[in-house]
Image (cartoon, rainbow, N blue to C red; front, side):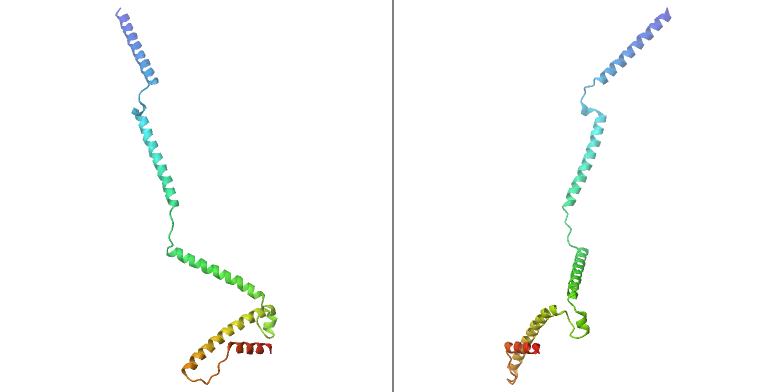
Length: 171
């Protein structure tokens, strides 16, 4: 009979253990505790906050870098100067090609020299204007010299100089 009693005790303990396991699983399943007290939740929350702050910091850095303006330092000034020099050189090259289209090679080889007849008239007018300005300056200088020295020299008016130029050009 002792064997029977022993077997009954074993089954009783076994049933109690199984009931306790069932109750624990049911409590875990129906857990309604505060979520902010859960350890794994708090770890996940901290990692999420770290990643969000890192991403926010990257966005803020990119946003601030867009507002940076670079001052003109030595290298920038040098590059700007070289660029302007190159642009000016290119412009003079283009202008030179245009000027060369008006050049008459036959005329320069066989007498006269200079640009083609149509362009020559424009250039001659410019040369006359330059000569007139130079003569006016010379006349003014002579006037200044005459006041200091003696009055032996003859003053020539601008109109007389222009008439002489026209007569010499027509010859």
